[in-house]
Image (cartoon, rainbow, N blue to C red):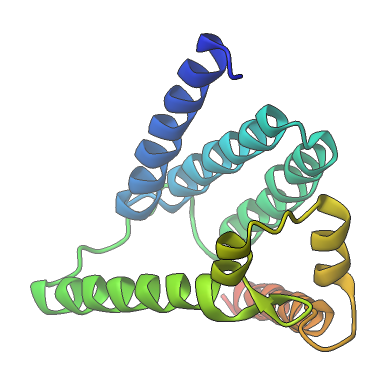
Length: 175
């Protein structure tokens, strides 16, 4: 049974993550937005630690809050001055952004619940059947190369991030 302190910590961290997420996407200063994103990533690591997944929490802090945020800040500082403010979006673009965000959220939820997750079984089927999924199975699904495993998308995203960093350096050198 969860203690009262764990429940309070959960809600405090959840509220902080929500506030910093909103501040990340609404901040006009890009370096400040990257700092808010850092707080969101650290909050996510706190959730992992609270669930007893110490390795995932440590990876979250080391890889995402540490490494990826350093790359983001480095790229920001290479491509623009940190005190630059982003221009305000006009009403048409803001409405389009909200519509795309809602559509993306709906598609993400549908994918999470109905796409095959482990051994061709979706998350909704796992919940209905009362099947338990341990961390070893999830880790194997993420780094496996068989059907319904996700190593290839992870590698594609790493190449995309590398291309973005090279593009940022190229743009910064042309200034």
